[in-house]
Length: 431
Length: 180
Image (cartoon, chains in turn red, blue):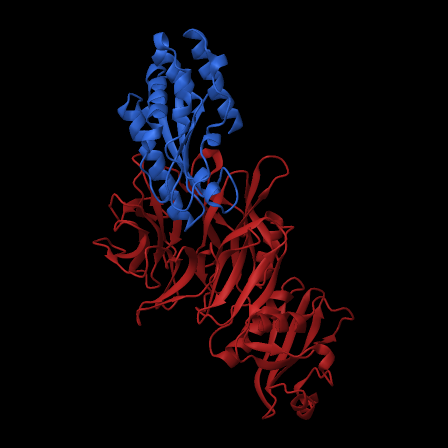
């Protein structure tokens, strides 16, 4: 119910973005599970406010782990478990089937009811009823897809999460327009959160998903801002001389690590207590220290430093002390992001002259290059740790792409607008 | 940017008027035209904007004329992943330092930039380091700290779009922006 409120509030304070993101699967997993998502029945209304089955099937297809059956290949259209003739579905080689109904209970009060069955055994695996407003139906469908994904794959789905990213396009005259945009993970429901004639960069979600910190160059200087999505209220946290950059929220949401260079221009990692504005310097090195990322337990920060000559990843305790070097593979590793379980580090890696996304397994000490572009950057883990989103180029234009952490499933999010970059994946929604 | 540049040129022209007026001899080529496209990992060496201006100096008015000529050059270029100022920009920066020292009310903003390769915030660090390298030279040669501030745009505001080595060479730069 909170979700409905938030979506409405976003409409009031944020502007729907015109450009569209469309997802193309560029490489699928070897074994996608065949699944039939049957069109949902309608009760209490003649018109479907949303193609629920379509949204669920698209989510599952996009994961690369499921192969939804085309609707035209369905021999029947059951909407309840009791109406399923499993032989119909064995015949078309579906291993799973989803049936359901969209019930209008009152004016703006719907419930989305669905069941998941194992076709071979004829057994129900899931059955849920999700209440939603008309506007919340899309999110409800994503939640249903999340539950189906988790039941079969064994890890939570991320279809109901969001992404934030930066776009830059020509303003029609001589300048550029920069936007910070938030959308659903499938690229739908885009909202412009900030728009500026000066660069915007480095968006990062608060751990509760309610706020975004970012860097803005309005007024020809850098500053770190924090903006509340629901209200649009924004607050300038740091606008000192030199660099104010690379904000990163602590897992408890109370502190923000950032890069400050001071008037003498020495970029170091600082940690600010948001409530008081107090800042403490965490690194003190003449090199460039930047791009801090907190370990999920809040005890360490990983960051980029070129203290050894070129940029590499280092780690320092959150309460200070000596930093230790983490990466040694190649001459360029930068912009660390950590998986939610703390086991993997995603970085930008110079792979023989090509900048690519690599994942370093901190436990197994394995380094794997996952992308194949020339100018790939800004990797970020999905909150379930299974997928990375990053920025790449297509025909010279900035676009977003995703890759599963095992490298098997790849997608591109093509945009109709300008350059798209710096994607960051929201935490799980808990509202 | 264009406004600032215009202001800088106007400021300079006024000063030239005060010291004998040779503004009509200022080369009108953009400094970027003097930088031939580089190859991987290198930028132009030898013939820089500095060299092409030397001929316009007049023996009996050398200092002022040299200062005036260089003041039209507002951009210092850098090698990949480097922030050392190359010798070919020594005269240019000396001229700006003199200009600042002689005109204490002048203010400049040094805008540091990087090419698009690598991560964005690290490139912000590189741009800042370049701006600071220019700032130190201006301070050593007589400008005062209060006249200079720095901002790094990293790879966010390329002078030339595109992913060629020549575009990269144009984008690794510090722009000297005179403020009103």
